[in-house]
Image (cartoon, rainbow, N blue to C red):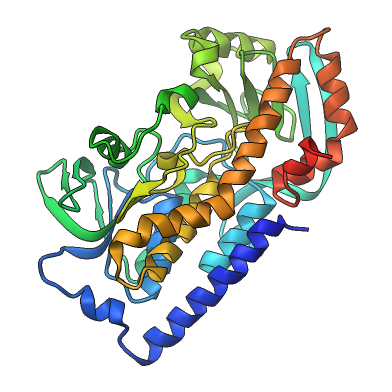
Length: 418
């Protein structure tokens, strides 16, 4: 069964979007009449063309808004991400894009899936599982391009290769790296963990957050499965190689993705050493690892104040990622959907957009992220105690429930509270 809070909000969202479709089909809405002023370059400026930005752009464009998406990169572009897709992610993709799992498989967007998984510590295996609903893996380069194409087909305009250098919150405008000033009635920040939109709001005193306190760092690389054949053929998570973090080994059709991440304030600066130790435990020669890169990611630092007036933050820019396993794709798509609903529900009263969005987040994503963070603290408090035996017992006893919680089929609240 899906999480009850999400189901109620999704029903409300479906009704709202359906009303908008009917209105836009037969008449020009008050929103559309007001937003035609020539002093604005667009109605909605979306900063960031990843899953969050593409989701919001698609919903808003198909409901009659003039949407411009800007990104510093040309697409398709490479993206550091293990690419895990869960049950809840496929559900929200169906809602936003009307695309199902079979379509994604047939088009090669999902390039690997497995019903098996494993959890190890630094000494050996702790849990082996067989899923009713498989984990799916995607290539983020193809994945992100696919959704951006759908947003463009819905009517969104793109300005790629020229990202935002500075935001002017009071003037509701941004300045791009190429010096172009873009003014919009609503600005949606979907520009990642190093978001310029969020930084601008924080510098202006419009939002407050100890952002670095909950920031993690990840290192990731690829290994050819043809050249090195010692991998498991299913996703595997490893604990014990880094304080307050985990390592992973995820299969793909050609390459294995191996990586490690941890909370920066707990793990300290030695991420490179942690990564080398993990790779050595897998018996992978260093020269076999390709494209080793690092990047920050949210890890429990989600913002409870997700914007200011007509400026919103989505996905990683808002810290919306799973505080246990770092899953961010679902939260990117879902926050994009919620941000679009908040804009449409404002009826051109742009100063209310942020409060609308905040209410939607606190009805859906924020409570669940809080429960996941509590569960993470329990898990990491058990790490290393008596050679991982309490943690192994805990995970095995609640194995089915943990699987369903990660997939989004039940709330993490039910793992913590009786």
